[in-house]
Length: 356
Ligand code: FNR
Image (cartoon, rainbow, N blue to C red; front, side, top):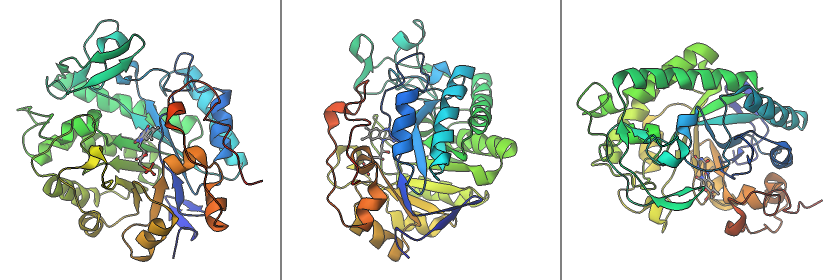
């Protein structure tokens, strides 16, 4: 078994285990609507076993970056339809990543209203806005009613994704955004049923999972977590214990997959408190995708050693639209240019060369 072995995800047999990681690229310049440039970008990458889209807002409240797409208006659904159609026409499969940034936002995105979070704890650092970099604000603590409404918003977004032709959704529980803010005791100091011990802190996540499963079926639901992550000012007193608990609980659901961002060696986002992937692999019995600075060799090893079932590649897919072909033929890889990660046009987006 290696990166080129087919794999069953949900009800789909995928042609390889070389998945495209979710990548925010800020090309939805008009009203957060997916456009034709994005059709080309995703279509170019349809030879991935599975494409996981860039993080996509479930509501306007979920926005924290300019020009990122949403899945809560008719026009956004119509925009995504063109993308799923193009990927399917090329024989690819595609999941949509569902996103709410929580406190990683600014009142400038919300008509002067503060961003929301499990608790009124301000993250360190600055947020990118249309007016340049701004210091984070202290978010407003969500009420219980609002948390229940948010679960509904996730469900509506998931239904919209299926209407737009996606093969499934990936719940974004990683990288310090809203769900992760609930999970960690560094950002969640609530004293009600959504805070305190890990059972309570993960209640929001599990309510979202259960409600979405009821609507679209577990075979169409994936989840992304970053247990070792410190990005967006995440801290936790005992991530290994807490994420092992979550992985054990996840066994109750027959999810399409669990997607873990493994610690990136030497990466400031993943420095302290590393959670061993092997421990989570033991706890979680379903399909596991790993990600984080993998290359072909390390990816093959992870699968051969049964550390994971598939590998998601981020930067390598930015610069190599035909990554599976390049891996297969041991071809040279294009290097990604970080200067164009979040710009608004085709440069560094749809102009990386393929082998043919
Ligand atoms: C990311 N990453 C990311 N993660 C996520 O869950 N949703 C997202 O929208 C994004 N956006 C994003 C944009 C860009 C430009 C980069 C470089 C990264 C994280 C990404 O999915 C992946 O975890 C990291 O890039 C590490 O994997 P690689 O690149 O080392 O294979």
